Length: 222
Image (cartoon, rainbow, N blue to C red; front, side, top):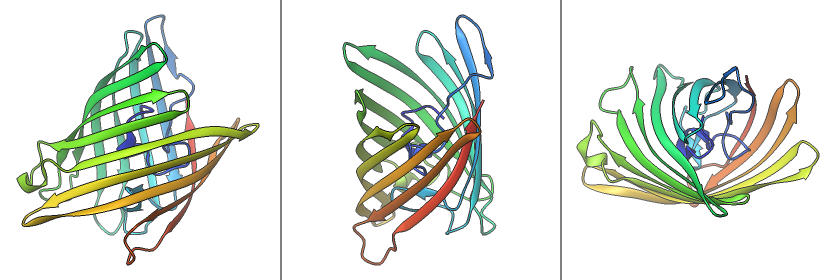
C-alpha cells in the first residue's frame, strides 16, 4: 500500500499496516512490490471495519521513478461480508522539504450491495509529519458522496527498529437524511525484524458508546 493512502493503512502502527519496503521486482525506472499481513481487527477511522473479526490483508504496488504509481489491496471483512478490494492510482512528488501525494482509490465490496465508492485523496508531508484528506465520490449510494476524512499524524523511531506512531482525525460520514461525525485517534508501536513487522495499535473515538480497540498484527513486504 502506498505510504500516503491513509484509508487502507490506518489499521496498524506504522501510519499504516502494509507499508511497502523491499522490492520484489525492479528495473532502473520502475518498482513492483508485494505485501501481506494478518491483524486481530481492521481499524478504520477509529472503529472496527470487520465487526471485531481478525483479518488477512495484502496487495501489490507498481511505482515509476516519475512519481506515478498504481496498485491494488484486499482485506477480508468477516461475518459473511466478503472482502474489500481497493484499486488506486496516484502521483507523488517533492517540492523543497515537502512531500505531496494525490490520487484516486475505488473501494469494491463484491458481497455487499450499494457499498462501492471512490475517494479522491491528497496528503502533504514534512519530515515525519503528514496531513491528509479524503473526499468520497462515485458512490453506489449517492447520499454518501461528499463524505470526508481529515487526519494529521507522524512517526518516530524511539528505539532501534521500534517506531512509535500517532494520528488524529475527523470524519463526516453522510447518509440518507443526515450524517455522522466523530473524531478518532490512534497510537501504535511497530517492531521491524528481518522476518517482517510486528505491530500493536490502540484506537479510540470521541463516541462514548464505542469501545477502544487494541489490535495486534504481523505484516511482511517483498
